[in-house]
Length: 111
Length: 120
Image (cartoon, rainbow over all chains, first blue to last red; front, side, top):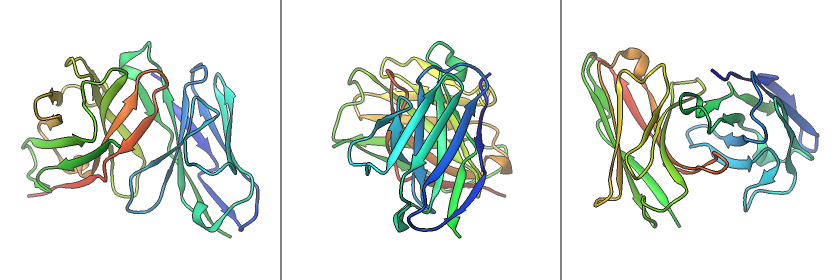
């Protein structure tokens, strides 16, 4: 089964910082990597799908890259609204029992 | 604009069955190209995929929960349902339903989530 890992687990940053979060899949998932943002008490919000495609309405300071097993979420200039937890999610449409696998999350906190 | 709303008991006793419904509005659950999924999040923890159902009734389950979970659809009511048997305190979580695209596997939108506590 596919395992997703993220690093770091917690990231301390300031407004204006460039922030990078890594996500790794235990096996090749091609481009099928999705990023979500979650704030306390709220449902996750879709940010990026297919590794690098920005969801409609998501600010352009968010970007994604990678393929295969290594992926990255970058926030080019951190804004106050961006302090949250970020999850990656892998998708393997060829494996019904591995259809969706989430990473453990990275919390971006105020430095 | 599609929106999802979870409903069901907020408290379930250990060994009993958890039953939740996800009501979809603003679009039909029979629209091609989408799974309807359930994801849960234990307090202070990460996200765990429970399973997905297609409007035809085809289902896909997390192997770790497969023996206890049944997903179904009611196209006449535009609803998706989750049943989980033999619950324990470890099943205490916020349960979300979400629409997931078949082509890229992204979940959007999500319901607001409903907290289910397993306790006697």
